[in-house]
Image (cartoon, rainbow, N blue to C red):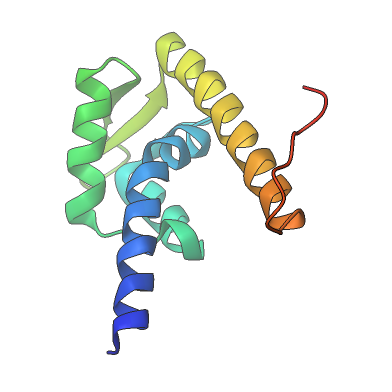
Amino acid sequence: MNSTEALMEKWEVQLRKGTLELAILAALQQRTLYGLELLKLLQSLPSTTITEGTLYPLLDRLKRDELVDAQWVQEGDSRPRKYYQLTPLGTQKLTDLTRLWRQSVTDIEFLLANPGPQPLQKTGA
């Protein structure tokens, strides 16, 4: 791996770390998922592919922070599954993070669309 590839990989890892909480809260928006179901959903999206070793500690932290709630559910003869859902505090955090995410994307899109050496002032907002 050359230095450019290594830099890109490092950047992708940092970006993923910074957005995983938002991705998990968004995935649990208005639905309840058990851990493996959530993992498969996140792994189906290129920018949120993670391992169990990353997901479950993050879910534990979100639970400690009272952003998600979890409960064990026994379904038939299968092993019980731990289902996760947003708490009211988690829903508020999702709203706040979504606003920050959208503003960041808007700001970066502005900068990408306006390259050049001249100082720019963004109008509006």
